[in-house]
Image (cartoon, rainbow, N blue to C red):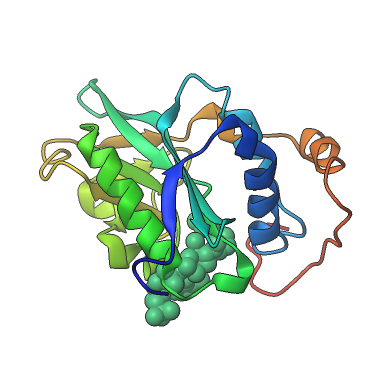
Length: 209
Ligand SMILES: CC(C)(COP(=O)(O)OP(=O)(O)OC[C@H]1O[C@@H](n2cnc3c(N)ncnc32)[C@H](O)[C@@H]1OP(=O)(O)O)[C@@H](O)C(=O)NCCC(=O)NCCS
């Protein structure tokens, strides 16, 4: 990758199909046999929590190679306050161009834009090995708990980055995943029929059966 061989811009309505196909190709068989992220993206665009200004695609040589997006959500603070925060993703880079630095470039750009809009923090589920390079840490270090997770469960998948330094300083509480992320298998299956057939495989390392 070199710094000038890609562009990042907001997604247009005419991109929707291509974006969803890219997400499908990138997530297919990674976390489960098949994937649901392309359908999640399809659903979230119509959600009031979706942030159009933070819905990005990355292009190289006229081809879409990556995408990332953000949603508004909340932390229910232990002192009763509701704290506005962001959650993120799906984020992906086309499988042929993984591990060349494009993902980090897209992530850092989109975080910068979210900070410019004045948002205070981003929390979501991800791998610290990738997101740690862009300043994410375990959300537990900020005193934020993941909804519906038992106290003694491993929460190392749950990450946080402050966009305004100190934004979460005086806060402990529970993060809520926006409802729009929960899609049914049947709806996903029906939506997936709009795309070319693809084989679902059970592979080692998948976290969902
Ligand atoms: C995750 C994803 C967006 C990362 O994009 P990418 O372009 O491959 O990542 P980058 O090349 O920018 O990675 C930067 C660094 O992060 C780390 N990293 C990236 N992907 C990683 C992975 N899967 N496991 C461990 N570390 C990873 C590496 O240290 C990497 O640097 P290195 O290649 O020099 O070691 C991309 O691989 C992808 O689309 N994956 C499938 C979909 C997905 O899992 N999305 C994220 C859901 S939370």
